[in-house]
Image (cartoon, rainbow, N blue to C red; front, side):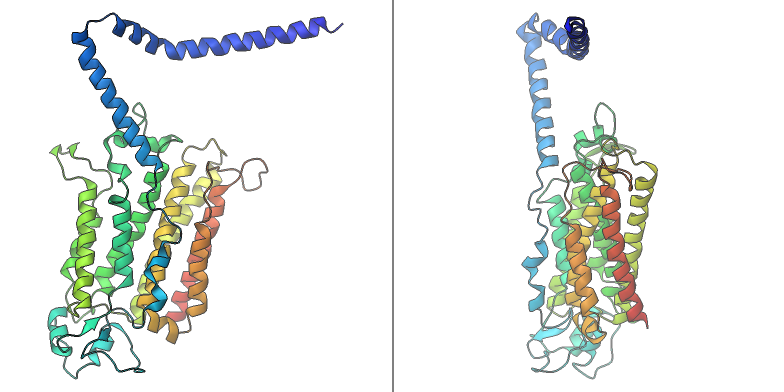
Length: 407
């Protein structure tokens, strides 16, 4: 009685198997044809072609390895800075003849330097330090600058900068890797970190690394900002304009050296870190705006392109936001140390600590496959909405801290 039914399903599965076989044969046919042609050629032809093929295999293997190996990635990288052990704010004397005595309050930055001697401020950081501080005084370096320089080192030295690699620029048979679900997560993550670095470099030049109205822009910070604004995709050669070029990582490495140079000058009290509360207000305002823009990008993708696991751009948005929060986790932790006096005096410590905890909590979200499902869905997760939630939580706390400082 069941023989016709069994025979029917046998025919169905046979047809399906035959169809799959035809598809596989169609996909493999070009490679089989090329292989047959290659075997029939002499070694004079086989040799150069074989070398080219081996070169392609090597370069693609190296490229795939670099996109998948996240060297020294560590969600708790902030711990190695021991920020809690810093005793004075950035730019303040911490040892030598100009250091405050035990128990003396420090107000940090330029205002603390002004209390060392009753000399009028000069128009340059170098003259300011020379007039106000005795020889042999050592000043506290900036944790913000340390973290920013180390994030650049992580992006372009400890790891390959994916966005400017030739094979990343060529794409997948001409299709941009960002439009595929493969090999682009690390590039997006690095660009997210770079966004936080760029924003921080601007604030270091405009406000934190100078006394506004009484000092010039620090040359090292100005150079770092300029190098970090260079585009993210330049290789050794380009078409517009045509000719050889300096690749992107070289500019970022130069910026890293400039930042370390600034901190070296700051430790000798030859530069300025202006740790006033209004500068912290401005810095927090810029960070909040930066995160607000990312939150809007996540929301737009989540609402209008919720294709679940089949949204090939969801992973780009997710890992960019993740990288940005990864960067700000370190930078804001460092800002808490650089502006320790302001945070303590204005009663910001509880909300500052909570903000850092939220940033760290966001870094625990590391799904293997990014899904942009509907928020009310029950089959596919909605990782973009989750990341957007954490981004907004952090931004909300930053806005509250900014408002407290602005009162």
